[in-house]
Structures are given as C-alpha cells and as structure tokens.
Image (cartoon, rainbow, N blue to C red; front, side):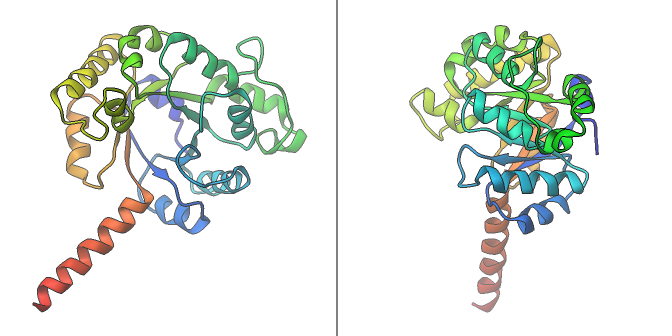
Amino acid sequence: MINLKKKLKENQLTIGSWITIGHQSVVEVMCSADFDWLTLDLEHSVIELSQAQNLIAHIQHHGKSALVRVAKNEEVMIKRVMDAGADGVIVPMVNSAKDAQQAVSYVKYPPLGRRGVGLARAQQYGIGFDEYKKWLEQNAVVIVQIEHIEAVRNIDEILNTDGIDGIIIGPYDLSGSMGVPGEYHREEVKAAIQKVEQACLKYKKPLGFHVIQSDHHLLEEKVKLGYSFLAFSLDFFFLGDKVRSEMQQFKLSQS
C-alpha cells in the first residue's frame, strides 16, 4: 500500500475514484484498476457504516488506501469511520479555518485533537492501540472539500490549518453555492476555482479535484494545471458510460 500522506506532503500525483455502490464486488472490480486510493461516499449514497467497514477492509486488502467521504463535519461520524479502519476522511463543506480545525480534531486523539478512544477494527479490537496511536499521528489523512464560495473566500486560512493534508474541489456544490448548480464552466465559477488553484500552488499544498466524467483526457488536463490529488469519476459512471457506449455502437453497426 502506498503511503498516501507522504505522497500528499510531497505533492506527488495520486489518482483515486469514488465508491457509491455498497457491494464488495464493485470495490474488487474498482481495485483491479490502477488507482492509488478509493473513497467510500457516505454523504450521497445509501452505504451504511457496517457496509463501509467491510468495504474498507477489502480496499486495503487490495493494497489501496481507503478514504471515507463522511456525510458532514461531525464528531461522531468521523470517529466511527476512523474506528472502522479508514486511512482518512474527506470532509464536505469546510468553509472556514474553524471548520478545518474541527475536522482535524475529530480525527486526532488528544492532545492534537478531541477524538474519543474506542477499541474497534482500527485498533485491532483492543490489542493494537499503541500501534494505532502512532499510525494515527503519522499516517491518517484529512482532506477537506472546497465546495462553497465561502470556502473560496477563506481558502488561505483553510490551507494553513495544521493537520490538513490537502483539499479537493467539489465543482457541483461550488457552482450550486453560486446559484448555478452544475454549470461549472461559467466564467464566475471558473474564476473561483482558479483562486483555489493559485492559493494551493502558492502555499505548495496538494491541489485536488473530482473529475466527474469518465474521460481520461479531462484527468490529463488537471494534471497539466498542477493538480496532484485527483478523484477520477465514480463507480456507476464507469459502468453506465461503458455499457451505453458499447450498446450504442452495436446498434449503429446494425443499422
């Protein structure tokens, strides 16, 4: 398994994807691709926590880092997915330095944070707490989502919050916060994204983006712009786009 935190710190390119279908087979198929990490989406899917723990284990078994996009910046939710063994979290709607500090504190044990101590899968069910405590300090990943215009305004303070390993731009919600949901090619939305890009490059912080379409050319464009933490599409787009394309080609060949 790669050391994702180290790669983030060194601004090395990593590519991951999004899991929304809570079945082990989907995770295993996605792991057969050359991703560095996979994120389980607990915000916009029906994946339950018990399913998430099973999927985390399968992702890690295949040598990939297992991240969880939690439903909100909330203490109990973050604590539970970390106890389930996640390598880190992606926290939505982080709009200020205060929000960023909260996210870090929910992941870390005192004195670095305020996370309560439990004994679960992450701590090897009680026999590996000391090892986990050391791992947590050195390897746990905290990514915050920049997906609101307020976050763009506060991007410098967010990026300079201790314990934040990187950011990822959520283009749909960012455009929505500007009153034009899904229209992230509009000039005002592109200007907001550019402000985040410039801040990350200025502070040498990992720059992340979720490329929704399953088109590798769009991924290449982001790499050229300096993005190093890239989510490439998601499970149902890879499935749906391929099946629709092949059936369309077949029908055209028969006409």
